[in-house]
Length: 550
Image (spheres, rainbow, N blue to C red):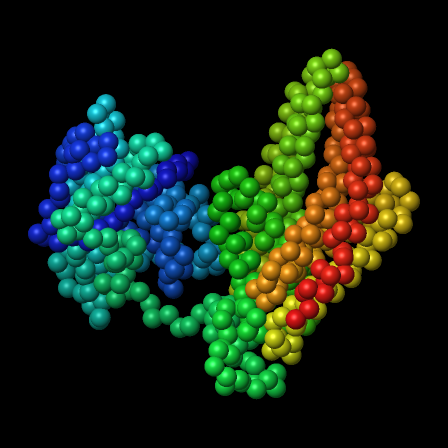
């Protein structure tokens, strides 16, 4: 079973002449206690092209010290990492390798570099004797994995050993004021000439100094997203002349860029979000499923909205797979939303009207559905189909299926795409308002909701090119989407309440309370239907659409 700790630390350069200052008395430090010397031996794993290192992730097998075992470190913010630990074994444990599957794809994880560290530890404690931080002075030896068995052996063919000294300060307690302690320690170290390390980690320095960091060819996925390749370099193919005017060069994917720059940067960003959220979803972290599902939907919407930029004959099959992934994630997310809605609704029922074991019945129902949806999400992320989708998206960015419109100015194409989606939304809203009350209207409103979401996403993608008008436009459409979303949530909630009432009746508990909640949901949906004409009229004013046109 893997354990997780939050690592907050800072690293500093040191040499054989470096001496630590007296740290007693700074901030809340009352005493500095010697903790002795530890000998650590770590073998770091990565793909041959070092994909984990490029993402700021480390995977190691370490012996010695107080935390021997496998350690996976994931970025968690500036100066912070989540360290996930597993017991020692001969090969990388599945509970850790699954968390980097979206990074490594089908590449093997192999030993890359070996580090031996002699660590002298001092613990900073407060007046009550509680630990606040550890200060470690590390003597480090590094060499390519498998090329030497001990420090001092000869390096080979351009790959050498490395040896250095550094200081590591890591928080171990201290509550809300703990980050201030790191600042105080840093000022004390600076006073004796100790400065922050240039390398972000021991692994990064080891790869650099042993010559193991590969000479990377330009990553075309990153290049097309940044404007250094892809659409930016293909403009001549679209018959567009290069401007020689000062300031005509591309600045990001803004008003001076091409539509290809804009869309590919957006697609690249959504893929980045999916990959980064993969381990969070696997670990069941709050809101991770929802955020990953949103990124998936945004990607699919971009393919459908910006058909003047990307060839739909290529992106349509990819969009189909994104729809599948969003649906699989949606099982878990929809359960979360529905459960929260029902729990809140039950809590609002007066005690005199809460007949039978309503809370217990709802809890049993929720836990059963949670177990099913959670298993389904994990099976999806572990499956071959998901892996193939990620590889396809990377390949699409490497060699994007650009159409002639990709070379056009970004504002022109972006405005057309947003306005086209808005016209589609307007048609669906009119259809919904004209539909007879009941199931037909529910279905029509749900279709309008999906069109509103697509229009909003198209406007959000257009923001770098269209600026503030696109931001305001997306915000107004979002209000329509939220109203329609609340209506659809009511439709789904009524289905769940029928199921709960049936289960309660079969168990001899009575379904009065669930029937009461069903009636409230009907009234809530009717309120949203009455509000729609006003909200839509306000959001669809002609002046808002006119502001989008370049």
